[in-house]
Image (cartoon, rainbow, N blue to C red; front, side, top):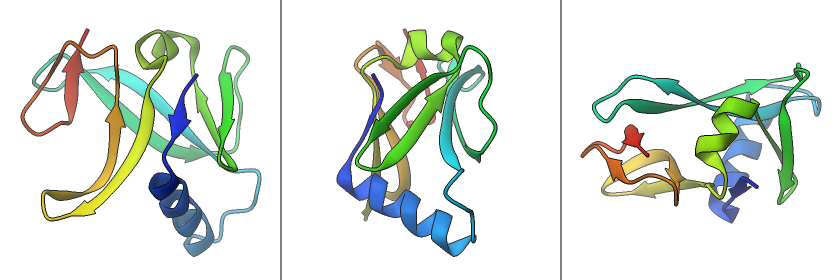
Length: 108
């Protein structure tokens, strides 16, 4: 499962509303090669499901990932920080064995 924190769910809803996206849109999260540690997170809004997508819903937000990315993201929580150490979405991934200093990439 992939989950989302209360703060991240609120921020996603604000963005969807602010961009005028209809209720068919969801958060697509994936893992791509790259970054200091070898793998990077990618997050987009989408409204087109694919055949092997893994679909989760938490706190009223639909989270979708492809099957390959799910192997890296299983158990991950999407969070949002607006503190002094940086603003933005963060992935709290229990599968990551190493992350880079900027938090943009990871390794398993």
